Image 1 (tube, rainbow, N blue to C red):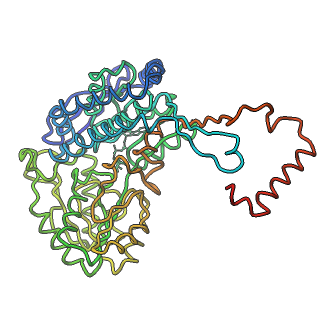
Image 2 (cartoon, rainbow, N blue to C red):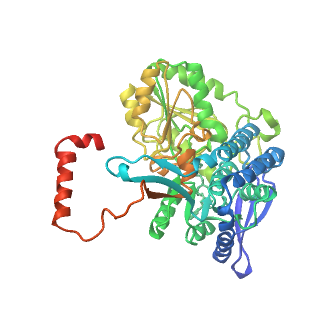
Length: 513
Ligand code: NAD
């Protein structure tokens, strides 16, 4: 079953034809925006943006709050659209797409005026006596937001909301397999009163995304895979435009031998199966210390065997569908590779025979080793992979051996031990006794280290990341002469030398630093 087919029509027009991963039913056809349409969208955005930027932040926030109310009002429609397009379970859809979106919209709308207000910054040293510094935040202009398919509504509406609040116009390019979720983001903002041109959605695939990146926007906010992130980073570097790259991961969970096994087993399952394992910061590699290994394996396998799958269960469905057929191929390859290299398959391991659509059974692989694909490359599916490690040192060494480093989690009954290990994990954020919750906390700067990305989103810095930070320097007092004015001369050089000696050679400098 192909979730997306690209049709080449006469005249070079390309169209995406989509099917639902739930049951293969047709979803519809969506045009791929070509470079001319991308350019037209950028022109319209540029024309609309100055009037929007001229509004007070509170006026922009009022539109965001109206849009938030519409998300509450239209939640059933959003849930139905996202579930049909992605096959997520109802609970995953409500928590990841609706709850998180509402929380982000409220958080930024209520705080944006403060976060974006000019900020006075105290100067140090001698300049503090004569100068004042205020940092101002100006919109960048037109921001391109490019998103993946695994959380298509929230990953569209969160960066879009922040970029709009900062006074930018936005062009949103959602994934080729989840265009309706992106179109809903724009429709909600249109209904909330956002003027035409300020938020436009382009449907299409990577070619449309590439045209947007090359189209002359002022910033790219990208969420997606490592290979695409590299390409976009290169293109932005060449054009000297800023970008944030939120990329994939193979996140590790370290389980110590003093842990509450029952709770850690719940953490393994929700970490590896939430959103059917298609969660950028889900748990991929469970590294369990030898002292807890057998108990953890048993508890995880027992619990995994009870999980329910299938859209017909409604709210009782634990694990949903795999969103994209190309992902099922990767999951199967990783599971087969692990078994061939000696992993024991305790639960699942294959496509569901009972359910139509793209369902892969929740799977538990144990006795995994570092040479297996499932411990090295992103699986992005409902697979628990557990490896036994002899001690903390081995756990940290293996956790940090990965190419990526998005998030990590440490489980222990001893808070000091957990903190110590967490501090040594090479990851963009670390959780203690919980799975990846960072993205859901708008205060927390979110992003990866190593191949997991560049830059941080969310929080005050994330919102300001949609602005140019422009420092404005003023004089403390009315001055009659400019201290640095020409002519230079031997007298001024001598005074400068004396000042340098006075400040730093005498040790007095410590009062001025
Ligand atoms: P992808 O990189 O294939 O595609 C992401 C988006 O980029 C899509 O809209 C796609 O059409 C577009 N695109 C593809 N090629 C492009 C190009 N050359 N130029 C511009 N745009 C292009 O990723 P995906 O398969 O849709 O998403 C899954 C990946 O996203 C996983 O690796 C997952 O870990 C990652 N992800 C990361 C985060 C995070 O916050 N770090 C969140 C969710 C998903």
